[in-house]
Image 1 (cartoon, rainbow, N blue to C red):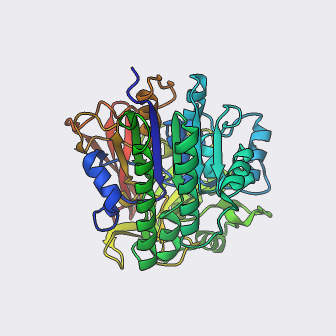
Image 2 (image 1 turned 135 degrees about the horizontal axis):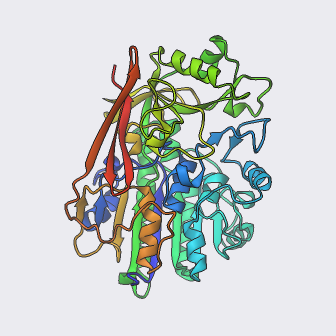
Image 3 (image 1 turned 180 degrees about the vertical axis):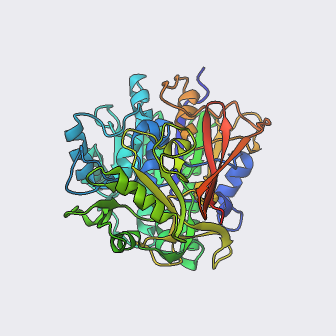
Amino acid sequence: MQRASKVVVVVFDGLRPDMVTPERMPILAGFAGDGLWFREARSVFPSMTRVASSSISTGAPPALHGIVGNSYYDPDLTRDFVLDTSRAEDIALAESRLGGPLITAETLGDRLAAHGKRFAVVHSGSAGSTYAINPRAAANGHWTFSVMGRDATRTPRAVDEVVERFGALPPRTLPRFEETEYATRVFTELVLGEMEPDVALIWFNEPDTSFHYKFLASEETNAIVQAVDAAFGRILTAIKARPGADDIAIIAASDHGQISTSGVADMASLLTAAGHKAARGSSRSINGADITVTGGNMGEIRVVDGDMERRDQIARWLMQRDEIGMLFTPSDDPVLGAVDGTFSTALVGLDHARQPELVYVLRSGTEADAHGLPGLGLVTGGVPVGGGMHGGLNRHELNTVLILGGAARGEQPGLSKAPSGIIDIAPTILDLLGIPAPASMRGASLIAAGTQEHPARIETFETGSSAFRQMFSLARRGHHAFPIHGGRVN
């Protein structure tokens, strides 16, 4: 049964739900108050943008869609460097070597196309993030515009059309005021005003970018938060101006949260000093290294020659480091990893054929940052100390915005504590349009959830070796588990 004539999705990259307040974001807060707000919604692990984008489009965790990190080493694709999923050329290389799609699960775009539905996207993130939302946009006959230009979309003619209509693409400034304004104009005037697709999605790269480099609640970041809130208001106005506006469903969401950084732990340098020559994922060269290491506030470690004894040595060495919060290794066990003291990658939905041999998460906690927001943790570098980061399992990285409004809000709007997450977005869109979700979508439609009582089955696990102890908690809903929080306990 079709429940909506059209669906509009607005994604605020990196937005924490505890920042959706009448003071900071009055329009989104008002929308939340009138809609159905899933306050305990969760991202996936790693809580990184391209991983999360792929989970939004597939309704599935990395174990099914195969994007196991923003960057990851895969010798089947290239032995020369770590694949960077933000880069269009790396994605093209991977698909050429694979002879097929990089994302290994059916997507929302695929399903919409199979049912003759139109899907239009306005994106202001990287080429890889844009790709992940609708990887086969061209083949599906869909339309994807990127403010990053022709090379950042699989439908470059969309960029040509927009530039001809709206003028040159905006300059890259920080905060991204110009990009926010340009993308909003394209979305409201062209996509909603003229194209009228069955599903329209806009992805704002803010406040994520400013969180990283300008800090979570600084004056500049608060200004861009207000700007994207105002942009959301313009989108709501454009929707209300459409005929049959009451039949249009609106979903407001974020892909992950963020925490502030408290210090630097350069894992590649530390591992090299310990006798394991490490190539940074960002270096674009393996150059005789023993291992590859990606960074952020978590990362993967891969042994170049596949020597699992080296992997085990590194894992045991990491357990002795105060900087380390969590460790994961692949295992047939659903909870415990192959190395004593580690958790299994299966516990966090990372058990794809591409999974790393070792995953580390740096220490973090729920202490308040300089602006009074809870969540502080170490980072390997890449952002100034005090800047925001995400990727790990801190509850404030995992908790996402997920609000249903318009025709999607149902008869019982309010605040729901039901277990939910970004994997539920695609199944919900399909349900609104009366389209069955494919079996690969592990998420579920949230339309029927309402404010009914959904007691979460919280499960907590602990493991460790010697002085190293770590814990992880999740919420069960049927056969799927949503990550709640993880970290070191000593």
